[in-house]
Length: 105
Length: 105
Image (cartoon, rainbow over all chains, first blue to last red; front, side, top):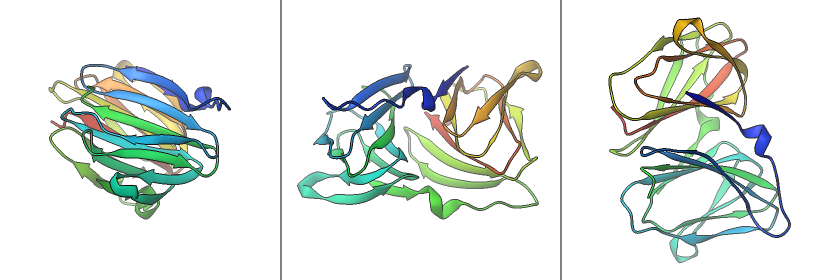
């Protein structure tokens, strides 16, 4: 049993997305990515079985998918996709996302 | 790929904790529980392999564990525990939690 305090990881960097690995186990990996306004987590996919959730915890922007799909992403919105589906994020404001991968690849 | 809007599930009920199943797959189950101030998600455990995360998305209260352990729980705090470890939640204010179970039992 452990406690993660998201408030302790609120760091943005000009040079690129700030990444924190918050938890890792054979069952689930939890990460926090902090994007400055304008930063992009490029669309990507991993050839693995499992699912990823991307939760906006602060700020707003866009969930990105294949073929230039963009879906409005605001605090409290969660994207759930297969790990092998293309997914990405674009930040309009400073934006914090919580990413959960199950199982980790 | 699907989008969940947490804002659409902000419902509290006098008669008990309001539960929403937001996503379910062989890999991960995502639930939202909304507790009115004073409501308690009793300490429990499931005899399954895997892990559960409990994220406070609004309000504050306590994460509960075995032997009357209580750990302060505020918005942005996340408890991660094995599914077979005792865990629970007590709400001081109206409180929304996001629960992720991987893999579902």
